[in-house]
Length: 166
Length: 98
Image (tube, rainbow over all chains, first blue to last red; front, side, top):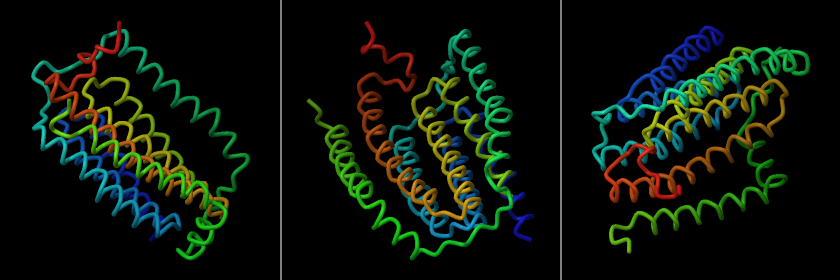
């Protein structure tokens, strides 16, 4: 049951991912990304991370993507009439890089992972309590650093996007 | 299941990379970066599940926090640039180049 669900949502996530790459209208692409994030949330749950599944839905889909959608609608962005295209050389090199990356990870890193990581799965389901204990003991310093970063980002975003920017 | 998750993570990452490489619209570049971040998150969770250790999930929490900070500042910069130059194509924004 869980495996069938996993296959279904993995396939759905891949379809939405292809849509993100294929659609030119920013609004439609962003909505497809919301679909990817929803599917990944289900996959997180099935992989034994229920807390991250909810964080993914609430923070990523609920806050980050809504912010992007808000900006797209605020500025009234459409796919530009003269579709902005990359230079042919740039395009070729970019595709080459993508293909390179795909092959490298599929062949090189893939065999390494298969040798070193136990692919049995079904790891212990993690409670929120264990996650919280770890976050506030071993990872306390990075946690505080991230809170400082978020504060700086909030102030910076506010300063940058004010209307009377002189 | 874990192998499938890693494969999906790889495919989503390459799709995001393709968006960043091939699209010239700044907002689509954002979406590509978000796609890559999500692919990395999925890989973290898959490895965490394979090892039975929670450190990977902690890394995902940090990634999500940093991604939202990045999107906030990036979109603010994008709004300023769009208001001033009336374009969303990154190729038209060349005042930082010589």
